[in-house]
Length: 147
Length: 81
Image (cartoon, rainbow over all chains, first blue to last red; front, side, top):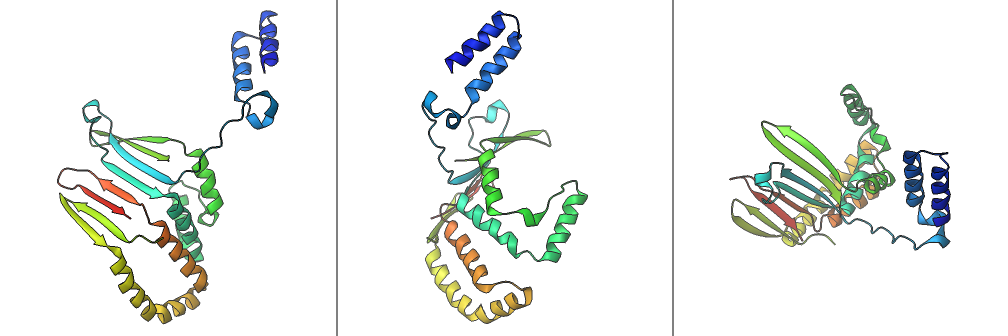
């Protein structure tokens, strides 16, 4: 790893790469997964499997920051997985109707693609999602994350 | 494990609901509704055992579900154990 960094610094000293490019290259080296180079450093601890999906709705203004969340929902991940299986019971006709309605509203989505393995992919990406909502002079923050 | 109790709070009123009693009543009703359920499954072309397995899975996953809404005069919270 150090050798790679030295090589990049040499290239920078020789003027063959710009400072920005060198920075990007070093960042890319640092981001390399431990599995790609198992002998060059300690392996990152495995990510714990999340047990719950938490949805928080909070007010954004500073005065309300110390207040508890307006909405606080904790749903076990197991319930989401079981719920996804329910999608297989939606009759084909109803599924087509829902898909059509979603497409009309600009959401090209196929309900038949909802599968438990797809949920796992979403959960993997859902580290911390924050959505700002403006509603009638009230600024809300919706936070969705797994824990 | 299915939830055996629920704690519900609404406008400063706390309610502890023994769900175990509810499950017993619902189990008796489920036995009575079984023929209708089987007919429904046949009509909708759904495998009945698969449907039962999914519903059981949902029931057992409900444990530790928590919901709270904090609005003036409309605060509500529920927790399944």
